[in-house]
Length: 142
Image (cartoon, rainbow, N blue to C red):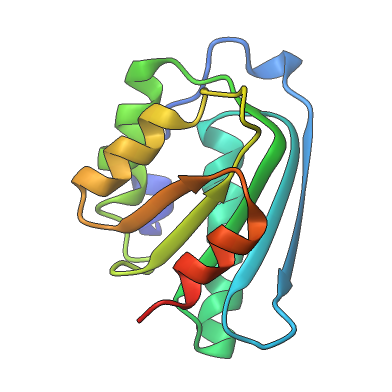
């Protein structure tokens, strides 16, 4: 049994209604992973998408991520977000830690604010942006 099978994943009660998509690619300069999500997103999908993103990052020796969430809305409860950050991602060896993450969001969407704060509190270098150039500058900063 793998560590993923042993650890229960918190999932929104309304899971069956959630529809989304995710694309992953390495940036042209090969310095960060670009993840674009469209639709409603919860812990279960973010766990799955992050596993794929971190596996890709390991394969190309990258530790920086640009998450384009402009067309994505976090539908987790505050408790689900907390569990995701501290119980699902935090202790998991499948995920890189000590990474740099830029969350590109819509200016009027605050559904990602709390998860951003939680991951900052876990020690990750992460921030919210509404401008892609600023997000990329943050990622590439030493």
